[in-house]
Image (cartoon, rainbow, N blue to C red; front, side):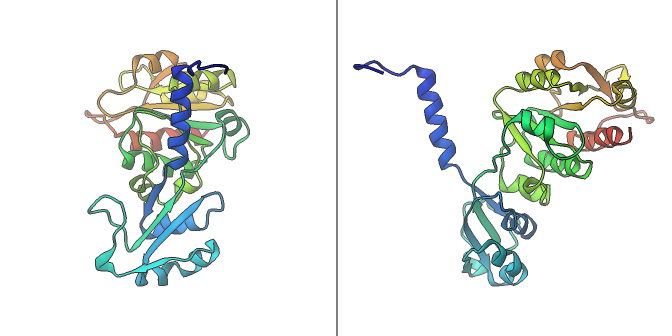
Length: 262
């Protein structure tokens, strides 16, 4: 760029976001989450803080990671995690995982041709539980918008109980664009909606062997209008009782099971 010409605002914003991403780190905590991150070769590990008791339980994983832990007094366990978090004397500072491009994961990723898309699900405990279910039922990825969704955090990792290290969690710029990209890859998109006429089982049977994307919204607001419009079908989980309502993580588990049975 010649002379004193200024960079366009979008270029400046993109560069700023890239610099912020490079500096971003996550503190994982809890014996299970820390152990799984330590033995994950794809995870960039920066700092490990342990009590003596936690080190005794994680010694093999610490050795495998080749890290030198900071052994601290349990009464002086000072790391930047939320007060009251059940850390079990173990905390690990890491870089967020990079799972690559949506197309690579959705087309040739491990597992069944099945993905879960989360529309503005911001509770890390719900997202962590969805990751666990996605791993159990062999989904290729859980996909969420980069903004207005639960980021990769220690609370999410602890709820995921290790699944965060193994189950791709892709955060995309625009969920509707990602949905359209999946449709172009041959995916059929099923949006969970309590008042839909078609059931999950009916839609899965109709889909045959096509790849499936299960689209789920947050409790309360549900799927946004644009998200609903981008789905191929809106589907519901039938409830034999008079009252039918599941939170998003339970609904995801039921829907994933239904797809796994085809």
